[in-house]
Image (cartoon, one colour):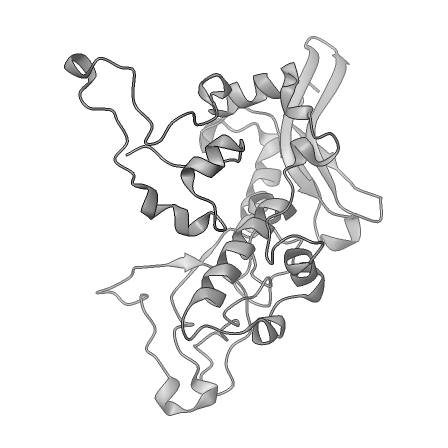
Length: 296
């Protein structure tokens, strides 16, 4: 039938899977055909349609091959959604909505807020549609989420991974707890799933709310010395060649000031010693403790 322009994938496993690529071998007249998918595929019973992946080739509407036309039209409908009902984790809807969740009219008239956007004069701003339920007292307003909530709809392919999401949540928790009138741990616990909170605040002899151990040293503490990790850091933008232990303070630059200007650090010891658990800069350097400072 010619060049395959799309494939239909059905996941018969009980859990989702991440489909990176699909390669079709020995296609008559074409040989190997490679599809780049990069998408999460949920079990078939989660979808009311087939998951279709198209070849990496763009067509104008008038040039779209006739066998693909129906599939492309259906894919657009699936991605836009019908604008009704709550969105689930496995949905793939990329749609916009107005800011209709600024108030909480169910708490009383004084908590109601006008909808931002959606008028002829002010059609913007717009936000991603979440599909949350409408409030009882105002069918045009959407219910708000608690201050800290993981129940936020984002298309599965756009969501952060578990570790990255944990990092963001940990930053938020630390910032809230450190506020003068911020919520206590007990109040935060009412809005954060217990398993996630337990991971962030577990006390294994370390300080509270410590960030998770990086994957690269989780199994092997010396893994950062490997050639593979060295190459990964270089490609990721970190230059491990210039990372070295602080030998003197304040750090002095060896660059020619006539060419590069003054590159010496202006950071003073009193700016960082408050966060060094009682150590002084000199003590930390002599005992080979890690002292991380940024350049000015």
